[in-house]
Image 1 (cartoon, rainbow, N blue to C red):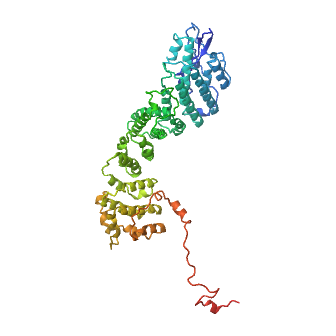
Image 2: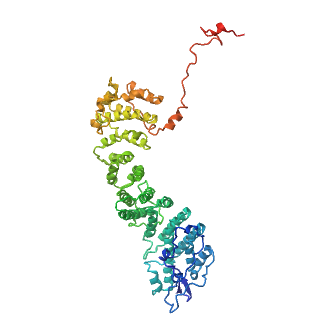
Image 3: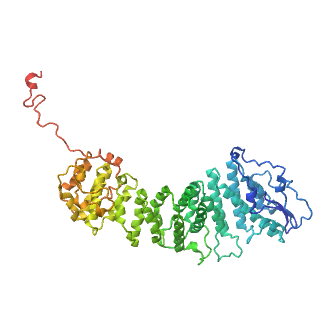
Length: 585
């Protein structure tokens, strides 16, 4: 149903046609069909015979028995450009009905017309909000407002308030437009509405001492960002710049925490990959302040310091941050999203939680999944073990089982071996455990690429330096020539039962004949007594094969003698038959 026009008696005794109500945008909005994208842009759709009823004029208190006539006479802004209509509306209330033409242009097919209409709506309603021309308080329905016993001034403000809400609804719909420019401009315009409405509240009784944030409008924006079936990464990227404001950040987290259970409960335990990815992208865009002081950047800055305004307090922000992540991680995630979460979890999530130990269940469950997910969960577990005294039963048994050939080829290899080195750095670990890890790494080294070997071999040597009782693995000799003669049980998952202390590190001796000279040189360290100083592994964790090849030409080659005997002239070598058979003339 189109936005109604109505005549209202103003104080001067004249009658003006007032503008449509807030909820009329959805009824006024043009619904696009699959083929609508090819229609000409910027033109109004032709009205059918039934459209007269949708454009009937609602009767006001002084209309008497006048018929429900349609708008036959052109309004003051009809046919004028949007800028001219904007000036007419802002210049005189008698031109209020030109707002209908501006809102109708939001449905234009041409992108340029739609963009101009969005800009015009932004300027129009921000100005009206600043002027105080919108009704303040509990807004009655449009029919009730127009037929009720209100003054002409009040009816005008109510009608214009309905138009403002209608415009917001249309902009929310345009956030799903095919054009990136339209999407971006809609987000910016709606956030301007939020900012302006926050400074000029539409809530009854708001004064300088109160802090009013337009939560409902922001909630509608967040719901458009979190689409259930489509990827909203572009919209979220547009919205991300506003998350630096403490109030936007706080209420975005609150709205998201309320929205997730509603969607996931409808799914009844099934995965909703697109929606969960959108939620993750939004939460990953929230960067909590690093300092300890309360935030100072606000989109709607409080006029006074309000004790009850939680958005101004860092402690409350952290509570809401913790709540929304707990709600999000409560539900099962797709494997690909599991990895995305764990990549940022230990740096972007755990440090900003008021109670990080609440994430124990999530991290231990991820650690038990196996594969790359277990590798990524190690970072968060290390944080909880090291800083919050988490006790994880059979932790080293699970860590030992992660040492598979694939671990030397994954892109998270550097992080994994960095953490492995930290977990094995304690000198209080039992000898059988260190021997098991050393032997497992040595066996993996037989099939590892050169760049991984240059990291694994020094790591094994560092383990032996920390635990002298395990050096027996270097000195034990054996005459066995078959792999089956090695007592080490490579398939045993329990490091206490793999019999690593009964074996030797013959793999390092085999690597001394490796084709790459750097690997052979690194393995040759065991020929001499190991020094007490450990090798710094930080530069070796990220070593890649291209870097290995690039540094080879930069090496200085030793000079090799080309002749073993000094020459005496061209044909003057000793015991040479050439001077005897030939002569130079």
